[in-house]
Amino acid sequence: MNGLRVRAVACWRLMRVLTHILGGMWTIVFVFPRLSSEQQEMRVQAWACAMLGRFGIHLVVQGQAPVGGPVLLAANHISWLDIVVIHAARHCRFVSKAELRHWPLVGVLATGAGTLFIERESRRDAMRVVHHMAERLRAGDVLAIFPEGTTSDGVSLLPFHANLFQAAISADAPVLPMALRFVDAATGELSLAPCYIGDDTLIGSMWRTLCSPGISALVEFGEPQQAHGRDRRTWAADVQRTIAGMRSS
Image 1 (spheres, helix red, strand yellow):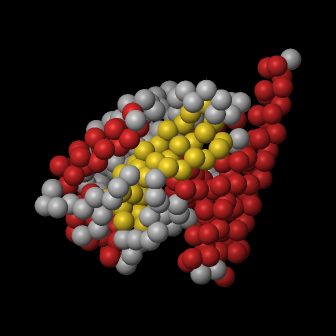
Image 2 (image 1 turned 45 degrees about the vertical axis):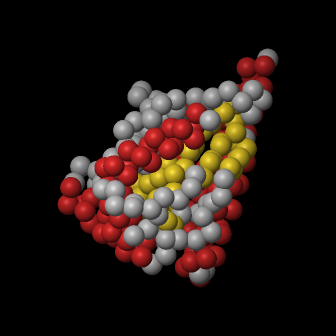
């Protein structure tokens, strides 16, 4: 009976999630063209907060989110939920893999939220995106990257790729480390339900998350760092160590 109740709650959450996604797409297509950039950002953040609620996820923010740009947020990557979690904590423009643009539903939402897409296999495209990122940072944007390049297991961090750090160096902008964790809301223990690695499918990961009794998404903002003469590889490694320390504290 308990299993039936869990599945019933998960199905109810799923219906609310799908309705919310469709509502977000409608807003992007029909409402966003009439809104200012600031109004669009507010809508995206409110939509992300509501989406977490529909998944039964409680957002906990620690540290000081940046009031404005230019700043490059660098976060560890655990799940397809990370983008929603970060948008709920602080609206930003993400740099994400180009495949995301073609995902059903998600691609429309990511494009509407101002995501910059990159072909990970193309060195020329990476250079184009770094140049565009530097332009946006000089214009005062808040950008966000996942330097691991893919999702990790939620326990340890993968090595950080350094290429996108060059944008912050070129624009003389700070990098702000962000640590993400998902924990069981009742026990505080690490929750692996939202993880999306290896043989996980998007549907399977979503279903585990929907079936979980209560998850808290923890977002911790660190202190902004300037390059201070560091090259991109050294800076990326330093930020990785900072985030690892934040997650273990």
